[in-house]
Length: 615
Image (cartoon, rainbow, N blue to C red):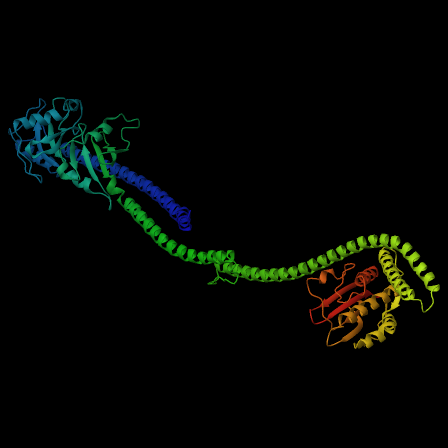
């Protein structure tokens, strides 16, 4: 999942969803609270309107009863009767007509009584009197006293479509007493239905038992029938007392309804209806506003989130590119540091890591170079050790062979030399065979010298007599034996003996033999050189004492240099030895714990170096 998607989910989970949940929870709570308040206001309004309507009706009825008690209707003349009726008529604007009936229910006076009031009362016809008599329970009044009143049922008043109700008032004592009928219209009561608290919504209807609307806050609804869904609720059995206020909700369209019974024994109901959409419109408008606000906030968050993640991705891509550069070995790559946030700390840490990696690579390369040098040195030492081991093996094999050959040749050679010397004793100086015998003697002595070298070489495994020896003294002694021969060959002798050299650990006899062999080889190598200079040099180096014998002879070619310490190998133009000098010298030096090395170039001479440990 990309970072932007994660950020969107985070914003949804952290901001939008909680805000929406809290907002809708508060709105639902506010809607429920508003609905409860509307129901409470409806109930209060229904109860108050029912009380007001009942009080208005009973006020008219009581006024008629009190006025009827003031007049002696039995002894009154026709004029007094008319005046009395006019008195009853004037008790309230809601009284539309008044007439007098005898105990038998017959009209007393003119067949028709006309009266004009505020409502433009219609004239009474014969059927009108019957209608009034049939709507009011007159019979129970006969047992009552003067001034007792009874309220009838509602009916429609002529062609006007207005609702009215008849009130019967007993005018005298006794069962045969006359009574008056007063018609009360409901139109003036609509003023009480329209008297509602400020901000009240909906409409108020006054209905009878037949669920006809007798009066309404909307006059066009007068004398219509309530909607069937309301009638079903009004006809439902009531578990509480009859005067209780009932509230319920109906659909199509959704409405909240409260019904209150008009008190004082009247069989009317006050119905208060409020359209739910209009009543809850502020909350629903607020819900739409909250939805729009949440949507706008979400869009703004998405925009800011897109900008933030774009900037964040750009900075992260720089780090990724730096890491890829490090992977390619570009350790000098650095990431730009901007700001003081966590990414800046990451970039700083990344750059610090690059510096450390670059330094580590430099150290590693340095270590590799040093390791390569050390490996080369170790390899060279190993090769030198292998070469020395190979030479030692060769010399050991030759020594064993030489020892056998020397022993086998030495005894016959001693016999030959002895017999030659005996023959020479028997010959005089003029004997022609004496010269031949001397040549035989010289050859025998030469063979004896060779066998002695072979024997000496074959004794390599014997323990040498190692003791402290003055290297300079050994060099001087060797020079005393061969200096005359060297100088006679036209060689310039240069000696550079370091003073205070100290002693070395070696066999003095063997060491003298090494010096003589090196001097002899150097002299022989310079026999055909135009420049003949022999240098002997001693000194100290790396804790060892060294002797260098350097000549200006023909030098040693690289292809034969590895074989110069092999027994019987020689490069001399004039064969003067059997090639055991360097091999014997190498054996003597190695037995003393030293090294014998050579440095040479063709035509530039050679330099043999003997290094011996100090005593």
